Image (spheres, rainbow, N blue to C red):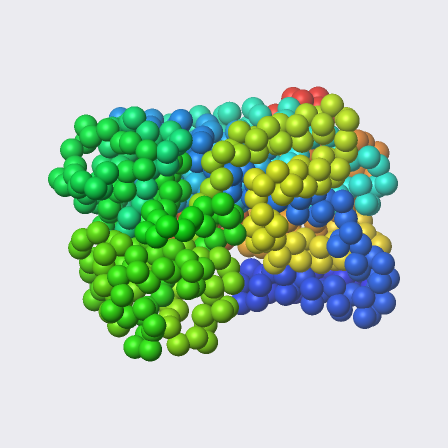
Length: 591
């Protein structure tokens, strides 16, 4: 190996060190590596930039948009509503999370699945009286195991497939190529998780403190043609809302106070709630709840995908001081609708439309995106918080699931390539209105995309300079060339790397080494590539090892050692099960 190979290996070591320390973002580290490799001439400009046009990366971007369509159409809310319900034990609650989340993560990138489920599971945990710390790790682990079911279950699988195609020139894997290994591993993993985690996880109270939050008066309406018409208050779930209390119902000029749970809802009922901002955001996601209108103008409901919630305080120079909300005609004046009012940190009693506005009143407004930029330097409001909460388009929930099924079927039966199927699905999500263009843009995790694209440059350098072959020979020397021992070493090498750097970067770095090893042994590379996919995805031992682990870390009230305690044995167990399943599926033995 010449100096270029040693330089590439050294650069890989420095990148691993910088990413494990955590001071610099992985995307910055990998972009820095790309620049050094290109500027030094070790790889060409085309090789340095090849990751940005890789089919695996583009497929990941498209699948983020597909997941956004499922989320913003209320597709996940649909699953939550039908499957969670009221379990009696912790194990039952974990099972109700594990099975649907694992299935969802098999066909959607597991990061947006967990992002969507966290607030739903958090609210559900309070409703059923089970600590979030008993449910959040199972949520993450289920998504991780579900991501191994298909090629599109996690970005890592797609990235490895894209790099495999680039390095070998072959056609790559089909959508269900990994299923023969991933399905038994997921089933065994979920079963063990449900057996062990109810006792192993800590039982901590909800870490969030809401006492200091502003309490708003909120008024919403029951949609005339919505699913809540005819249901009782209790059946509609409006008595079980956390941090939100149904104060009264205004109906045909009369007011129902001390509302009983048996009270039947009618279309057009105005419901007056008291609660805080986050609770209000949860309420507005309920199918059948619409903003109440206090003037004769239509609400913004026809443009729901292009709205957001904004907290804004009235300034002393505001034109609406002294006016009631109804007389202020916020829609004409500002292009916004008042949903709630807080004064001095407490709710303002009475009918929302008749509240007279005073200096310092904090209004919860439903407005179009232009409101924020237009009012930022105006005299009427002191903007406090752009909540960017958008109400799902529930009428498109089934359509979004239909698009996903068509996408999967087209890829599975070879009608379209995985790339084209994902691009078609993303386009249909936007064209059908399941998500807006703005929502699609926000769904793409740019740092993750940059990390993946830039990692290809280092992978190409390791392959081009012979460094990958050098490391491969070392691993083969340790394993004495035994295929099964080689798979075991590959799996646990990727698993360790995944715990200290990003899973995508770990997979991209190791794959060239794996291909060099299989070429040296003269055997098929497929089982070893699948081992890389599985090891990079199945990361349980630390919150740093996988993005979904970090996402549930705060909401679950966990400490670092909570993950080590349950995750390290899980890593070892799933690793051994995976290698065992691969050996059975591909007929690999020690001999």
